[in-house]
Length: 88
Image 1 (cartoon, rainbow, N blue to C red):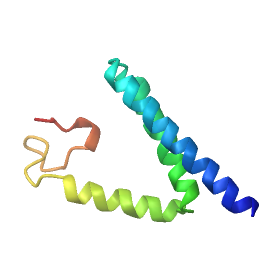
Image 2 (spheres, helix red, strand yellow):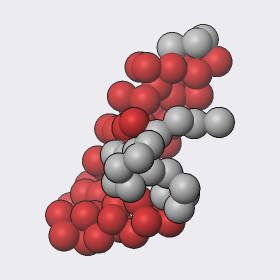
Image 3 (cartoon, rainbow, N blue to C red):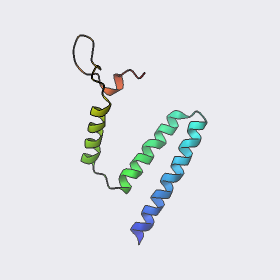
């Protein structure tokens, strides 16, 4: 049962990291909390055996869902990349 034990350890680690992330957010260390979020995501991907192609498909789907139709460059009609969008 080493696989089950390993999964249990990873799940416990995810829980611990989530608690640490909460503390960091409360202490106004948002950037460090974001880094922990990435670590949590990586562990969850490993636990659920998500492939690179599955993750890319999910990300592509989310980009389409959250992209507002009026989000275009002025006068050029091209959509803005996600990192250039104005958040209101």
